[in-house]
Length: 127
Image (cartoon, rainbow, N blue to C red; front, side, top):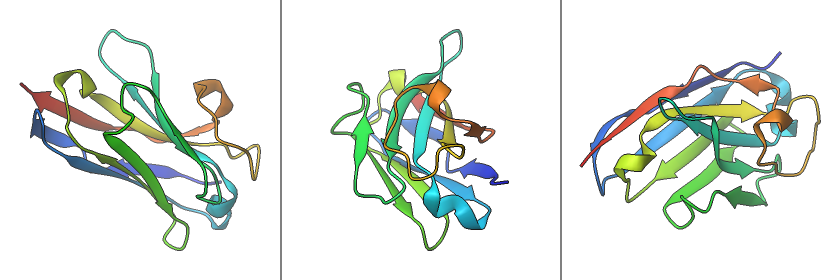
């Protein structure tokens, strides 16, 4: 069973940058398409970005396109989310997720397509 642990959250000023990391355990990580989601207080879980198991395809929410970049290092069992030009509305708990029940799956933007979730890392953005 793959386990996911996020890190890299914190407090940053608007316009600043953060790099979130998601460490995955287990040998089959390289089979799984991964995603980042976020949830702000009082709001539903929101898709942020997804990257295919092979790393050669990705997709972003319109709200972060051009500012955020998702990447993965399969040799290190890691997924990253580089966040630039942060805005106060980006503040949320960010979670990484894996499509472990569908190996070698395409990218997906629905939270229901993911079956493994990390605990999340808090991102706060001051204006």
